[in-house]
Each structure stands twice: as structure tokens, then as C-alpha cells.
Image (cartoon, rainbow, N blue to C red):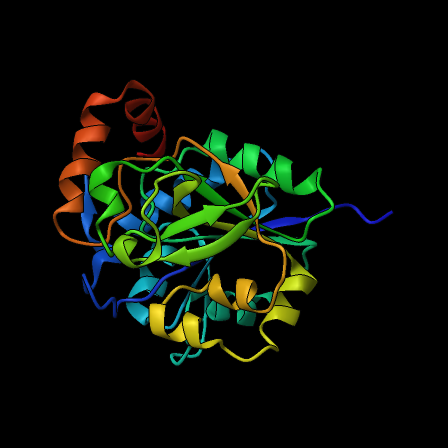
Length: 251
């Protein structure tokens, strides 16, 4: 039996519509993309961490820090598509896509996520977390609804239009795992209307009636979608004991 080989790929680009160049923003003396990459490297269950980017500025930064990086085409519909391009060039059994705007991701939760993937017959997983009232009405935060089997059955941004009850509603985290061949097969399918209109990559999975398993983690107080989110990130790095410990290790 072939040994499983787990690769983490971090898609990263400079042209973010809500917060341009956020991937390079300085957080406690370290660019955000490096926070994410170095935390991923702390995971005990991965073989490689690769940054996938179309931008030379990001490529140069990662190389300067002795990281692995692969340049991609500029025109991709989303990060999943960018990761799939890289997947064709690497040897792996599974791929974990970790978004570059998750600077507070905990290495232990990456390990738990990978363990879940390897001990399941399912092919696609996405991390979710408990949602508070502010996040519920923030359209930059992607919300999900899960069923009794912990499958994600819908993703949306506008809470008012989708539900009147908070039951079984969670927030979506930027960490999704695939069997490599499943990811490559998914990219052969056409983009769904919901995927394009909502700008939610997971809708291609749901609209094609593929099973998307959820995995509940504690996660962090903020993904960085706006400049204001940096206040939350810096506060957690300053006040949370586990976050301070991780920060000291990656410096």
C-alpha cells in the first residue's frame, strides 16, 4: 500500500479586492504569509509546505526565508484553482489548502485536521468554527449550514436572506483538504453560478452534489479580510498564551 503523502499548499496573491497586498502586511515583525507558512511547518503530519503565487514579490519573500514556492499563472478564478495547477507538478496523496490570511492558525489543529482526513473514507473536508453575532451579519465572513451527518450543505454570506435561525450555522475557515485526484477532478467541472456570484469556492463542490465534510475547530478570532481585522490578530498574539508561544517559536 502506498504511503500517504500530505502537502500543504498556501495560495497567495497581491491583488486582494478588500485589502490589497494584505499577504505582505507586517504582523509583529513578520509578513502575514510567513506567519501562515511557518505555522504550517510546525505541523507534525505534513511532508511539505508550498506557497503558490503569481507574484514575483511574494516568490522573492518566500525564497528569502528558505521556503518552497511555485509561480503560477496569473489568471485563476480562485485559490483552489491555483492550488490545482501546482498539484499537477507535485507528488502527493492528499492536499491541504491553507489560506494565506489565517495568521493565527494553530499547528495542533492542522494535525487534528490531517488525522481526520486520513482516517475517513470521505474525499473533501473543510474546517468550520462557532460563529458569534457580529460575524453572523458580516458579509466578509462565509457562513455554512451543516446537516446531521456533519456535511456542509450550503455556504452563504448574507444571513438575512438565508435563514432566521442560528441552529447548525457556523463560520467557514480557510483550511480545506482533498484527496489529490478528487481536487484535480473537481477542477474539470465548470464553475457554478453560486461559486462565481458569491465568490465562495466551496459552492462548486456543493452544487455538483459532492460530499463536503465539516471539521469543527476552535480556530482564531479573525481571518484578515480588512485592515480592522489586524487589531484582533495583534490582540490575540499579545494576550493569548498559546498564540504567544507559537509566535516565539516562529520568530
